Length: 291
Length: 225
Image (cartoon, rainbow over the protein chains, first blue to last red):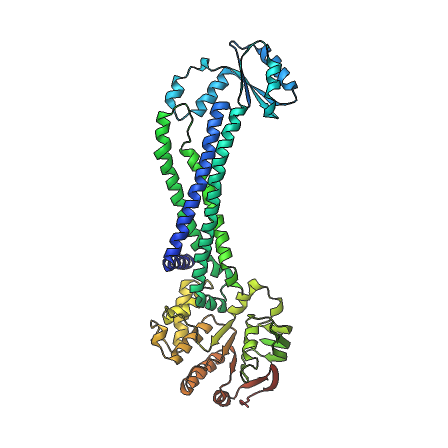
């Protein structure tokens, strides 16, 4: 209990002493983690959209009703023999329906209105080399039981290209911001050490362990970055409610990220906050604490 | 309790501060280290605290070979050694009580132990009525008493005092020496570096004289020169 009180006293007095630098460290951590969280959520949103539009396969071979099991077997066999084909999956009407329901789970109006019979069964083909779509088309040309062959690779490529630029950009900015946050935290720690160099000298003289001396500073840095992280998480939830929830109402044919997607990234933000602040604090106090 | 065997200390800039020094101090002894400035007194004290390492030779404090002491064990060595310096090194924003308690807080002693021991030691050094004063409200002699209290509150085996009377007038110095003598009589080994001739002559304790880093005299019940 005495230890906890000591730690709390040291941490809060540290924050009060260099409030302005601490505030800079907190707000930079906040912006960095906000951008980091945004880039994670954008990735999630993009993968949801890709899942919805393509089911993550390059080629979808839609089959005519009713589906004949022999046709499925022979088409699967033909496709599997092609060297460019990585694998072939059959998706029945029921499976197509289940996937649809799962994808749009947060849009009940859409799920309740869908007629599962309208969703076609399909062969979902994954290619080793998406450029070789022509081969697949050639092999399947004129085979019975096929309604439509859709090449999604070009679309996927474009989508990936666009979103990659966006994601990498946001990630890059968040990285730069995280580095700035680390430098600012290191600076608050260093200022704290300097302001208390006399105390630290006495602590060493009377035999306080190095960790005893370091931990208040580590906790101070951790505290700053975790406040930043908490603010970032709150704002991400706010953004989700403010922008995604209205879209959920108006743009019904796209699956949107839900609260649990935001919750899922919280551990990553906290981890980033902890790692950044610990590294920063250790770097900040490195030179000051030789025995 | 303390043993230096053929200890040589050469600083990185090439200065030889101590050269082939061999001194044994028994438990409970009171030893003056005397000599002019630059004779190596402070270096000897720094070596005993492992703030510096000997270039050659072996140093034992409380049975431990300092050369073999890993850096994470150094704090535990220092808990057995109280240190008093010329300029007191008190924290101005803490009261007398808090300054002394600080030494126990930072080595993780529980609060009831701290309260009891700090009160005891402040009584012993004669500051029982000033526990809530701040250092700048005290005289130099009183401040040095606080720093002696802080050095002794953890009941160290050894008390190292580096010019403890250097900033004090003669009569105050005598009071401080009486206090150090008291600390010595309760069993603490005291090593005091000084060039205060009057004090050494009055105390008639063992004197180790250093000159240019060498022991030139080691005399029981000695005088300054």
